[in-house]
Length: 317
Image 1 (cartoon, rainbow, N blue to C red):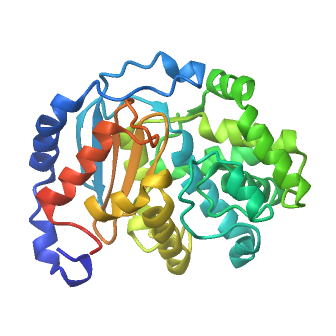
Image 2 (tube, rainbow, N blue to C red; image 1 turned 90 degrees about the vertical axis):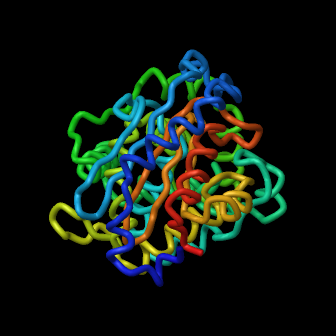
């Protein structure tokens, strides 16, 4: 079902509660497969058997199954929020410093960055996220607090926090991130001190949110950049469209082509096992299961999103 052609009554007829329950049953045999992100010590102990999924609709509906209210480290999903803040801060000037193409390489690769003279391929690989973090730092004081305020408002949850133990764990093992940041600085593509950029980056990745929080927080991207509770603009419709496009083409590391093929929705993943997806003009959804495949995406989350589009017919294609 192409969303551009779908009559509203068809979309309203979807029984999302039954869909999520069916997905939970269908993916149950996969739970426990994959490997948790043990290269970040604080993530190594997360039980691999966890699974949760939540969906929120533009009319305020909430549907959930499993561990949907359990908070976890969202990791790279946070890059959607910082990209929003950076675009609001400097607009299209961001694209002078970071590209908009899929990388085709691992998310923490140094090789491509050197070959392309310090301009990261997109804002969702680590190097690109460092540039985005630098923009957020330069756009005003209290960068961490501003990010927290943003996600709390989007999720309607003032209790969302950054986990200091996860941030410290990332700092102690973030040698590749430090190398990327120093490399960017050598190409004059960071304005702030490397240590400040990395500190902000580690703390954004250490945001703890649940599937319910994440589904609510992404609704502005399903609603042309507007908050559904107050109808206030969070970001312009054009920029919301751009972020969705980047999620579709770059949001799942170097597996974005497979996700476009099997899922057909804008998706962003994180090595904490979370995945978020946007159904334009309909809903936002999030799924969490910590076992990762060799690309860094949740094994169960990938299957759940694919099953969602199969069962509902909702896709951008």
